[in-house]
Image 1 (cartoon, rainbow, N blue to C red):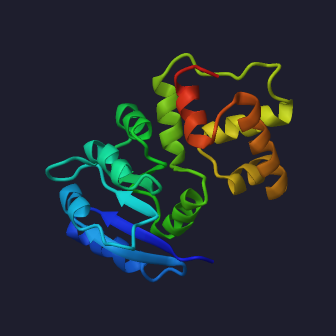
Image 2 (cartoon, rainbow, N blue to C red):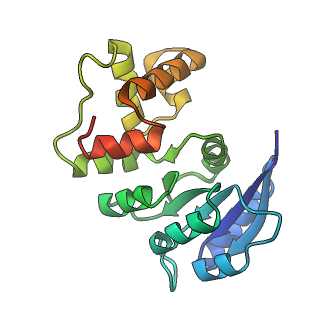
Length: 210
């Protein structure tokens, strides 16, 4: 497995130490930068070791995580940003996704789930706490339904699981399917609904565009 460069932006010193200490000990993860503010992060980006994934807190001193998101994406257009925060209101969630976040995890997420979330995002997927998907869909009414002719019954079940925030393995467990079968259905859902991935699927579903 290729090593993933990881950066952490977190103002709480205890949380910052816990995250950096745990993640730097995980196979395939290389913590290249730990910052207590967005300003420090942007000023201290190392040459030649740009992070592939940035764990970004929202409630930062000075420039907030939400305001820093566009600046980070401008400096690191190939990097994925996972917002990690205690806030679960739909407005912040939607703003983070619309500004380029590839994932939104609540700080209640068990530490042991973070490495897989990071790898999923770096592999082109997304990482959303299940409650996050539900918050967004509950905020925007009416609840979206894909056109009946667009998806097969099984694809409809996969679609519903995706907007519940489930990862591919969790979709497979819910529906009693093999992982590769689920991945095939996911690709078909994306193709039929003309979306590039989970973030666009959730965003368009939230706006009632599917």
